[in-house]
Image (tube, rainbow, N blue to C red):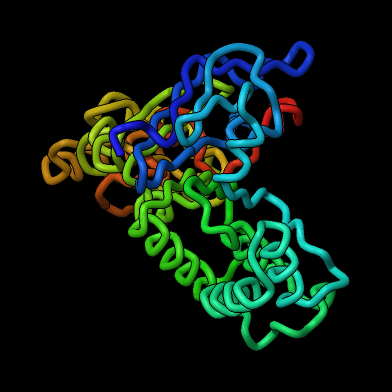
Length: 325
């Protein structure tokens, strides 16, 4: 399809005095995975709710599957699936009954709804619990069932808002395989996530937002290229302020040292690390700053977050309003 499956231009959303979104643009062709990344409170969930017709934007235009989400919300809803941040399944039905009920509500016949429920229970590793009442499920099992529910009607466009939160590694890998199979069949997926490797694994393109604004966009490789070079990662000894470590390194690298306040480490971009190691140790000795660990690695998407937002993706933006998510 030449037409974009998701096309958002200049989207604005306010909650009172809080600007949750301030002119966000998104693009996703059919069959692609668009990763929407950002710290907690960046505006990711607000954007998903607008795309899914659950919120009206205050300004801008939004089209999903070629239809306007404001003027044609019912038509949009027939073509989309949504799995929000919190599982929305009936705790008093079994897993099988939940999926069959959604299948019937989506227009499937009794036999087709039962068949589709079995397919999704198997895909989401829930067959062994298919006939157990959902209130007895673990949090991870409820999450997998909620994702399965969003897939019942085989949507053209699927919105997954942090879908693997709470899943163990096996569950996450299984869900990744399900997403890949969907996109191979032409489904477009918008994925919000705090897991950097998840975006690296799945997303064809990535948009990074912070405080309601787009601050970077591109493929994973393009975003990594923006922070350039390798990374020296240093961890100060207990009781030593990471800022002192960063100050000691000064302008030694190819970019300014970045302090990860959450993890207590300092990340230094470097172009020629072999030429710098001796000087790094000399500066630390002169400043009487001790370290417990030093590692060299290639840049990751976590480095993109640190460089662009000043915090890792897992950081909680407690200073930001709870209205902006």
